[in-house]
Length: 198
Ligand code: VGL
Ligand code: ZN
Picture 1 (cartoon, rainbow, N blue to C red):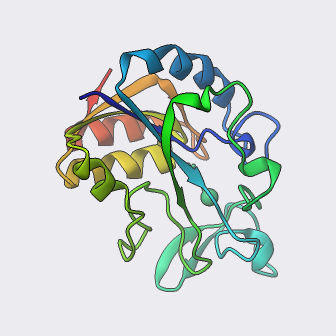
Picture 2 (cartoon, rainbow, N blue to C red):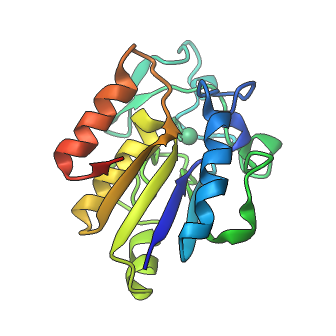
């Protein structure tokens, strides 16, 4: 039972988007070509309300990429991105969405960010992804998407701790690289945690 999990392949993470991931668009043909090899395809969608606490714009006097404390958790402040029901939150044009069986939104609670597709950053609330996969007998995941150093990484780490076998498709991922080397470091962290990086 091969399942492909696609992370945040949305307009705002593509070149020209509000939180552009360099080369993010290069992932689209890679994952489209892979879909036929999988029985299931599921996707996460960063899906923030306009007043989300991860947006620098909602913290007067603060700058994008600054670190703050958000309700007890460290939070990087981002440009406004992936606002619910806006074009930036839509899947990237060219992504073959026909095979996506289910979409799991995340980051919907203004008080906490959610990099992982399984839980928010405080592991307080679940998106339902883990239970959904288990109900269908899924034990192994192949993961691709953006950003390697944020949502892909935290999704993979949660998947492993939830007991899923994880294959990380490096050619189907791109990183933000706020600091040079962040994406490379994330690949190492995922491998160390037990993901098979291919
Ligand atoms: C992401 C930062 C903020 C991601 C989402 O998809 O990696 N990064 N929101
Ligand atoms: Zn976000």
